[in-house]
Image (tube, rainbow, N blue to C red; front, side, top):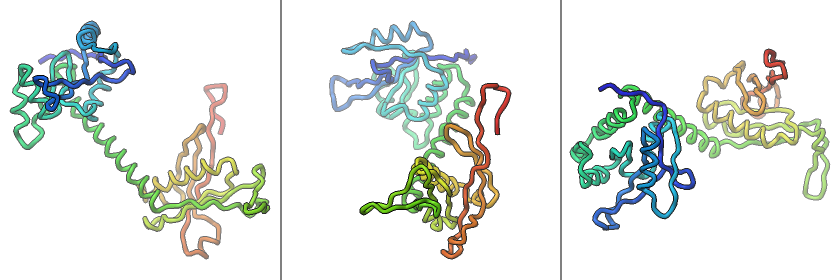
Length: 296
């Protein structure tokens, strides 16, 4: 089969811009409803005709999207749906959806039979049919599925590491020795213009890693520095080989910052019996008016 490449699809959306889904009753029995949607079309006029045909109490709209975007959200799971439509061809996501397609005439394939096995043969068949409809080869779709799964795995790993940091790592905030501390009632007060702070982690030993610290943080940057320190804690838990003196890092934020990791020279750590790495900025990169130059 020769597939025609296209870059755009036209999807039917609700008034809020969300993809259209609706519940379709079987023989008017509300206990056996199936969710149908989204609806995508290769041609804009087909999408407009579908919007008119599907319109109920609220107006429907047409939105142009990239084919790759639609395929990605298909692999991500769309929504809790049973059937989705491409050029009015129904494609099942669940066995109930396959049953619904069979009741509507089958769509040219025995979808219910595809769901009978214990493997994911039905998914392969859906992917092949989707590729035929949108002009993408099976290999292209397999590659996109692999990317989506890799991103999902990375997201899950990131969430797991965040939970580990929140459960085991705390950030301590201590005024630097140079900060002028005064007592006002129950509070110790530090001049925000001149006082700086020492931030360090407690708990990296749970992961057999050194603690982390940032020194001389201005008062108005303490919250941001604490979040940054938590972020680096998670980074080193995920990449323990980087938790070594001399590692070069790149910080985020409005300006790109190059960072270097070195052993903390503060004797307090040795007295405390813990190892600590200090994260220090080396260079800040920013663009000037002349786009051919960068100032370092």
